[in-house]
Length: 332
Image (cartoon, rainbow, N blue to C red; front, side):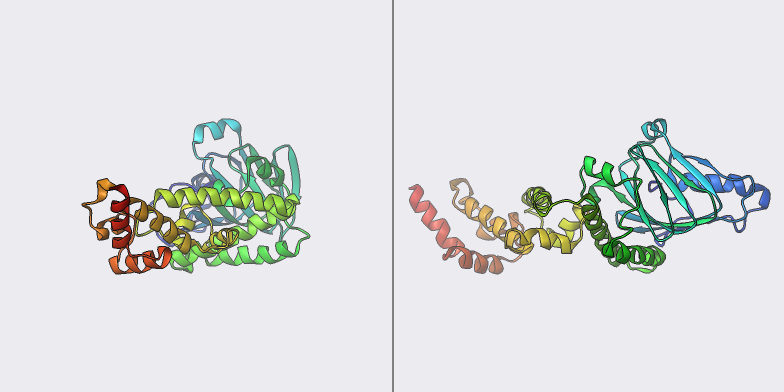
């Protein structure tokens, strides 16, 4: 139920744990250990006779893709286990591929049928019951990546998500395919696809919550304020790119651009504008009079002095040198 530290079996393509090569008399103990290594602090109940079971995990940036095939299972995460684990900052989005399931969390219990999605939160007690052989495909993601408030997250747990929705019908096979092929993607490609799927999960959650357009816009503007503050803190880094910003906030680049469309500006243009403002301020300060223009530009993330001069003149109608000279005259 949370991404666990990889064992020596893990590599960049993921981890496979299976009972296939385990002697029959040791399978039950092995299966419990495999579930524990995959799901962290959780009490599990499994039948006395384990015929077969496998758990495959693959990393997709901050997301973990997990497929489980197994015999009947009960899994319980209690408040005691949560308090002792120190690893509860995750949400799990699960597609039930085969079998049936019952999920209990936040005072609700729901039965899930094949093809349905459901969500549970690792920060609160949860119980999963799978009474027959099953297959699940899950994305385990940081709570912040889903972009929901605590109260909103509580409203969508332990309930089939998008069962009667056109978006849900689209998302279920997409998530299934992503989990199946997670180990085949180059690292950045897999991470980007995962972020786009999570964006769809977020949209489906908003649909389930019945959130009005105004509320959604308010949430987007809150995210935009947070991202702008991040940009201001990292202006000096030449590696400040839309891709890096999206990765730091666990969102897709597509969604990042969508946020800045609210202000009718691109992400790159906003970064350039903020850098120019800082350069203009520094060039006007008497204490930086002995610092070269190229050094000022470099200080705020410009890697080319000639490029900086061009965009500065385009923005303010004068060259950096002319701006500095006029500032000195004004000070005198």
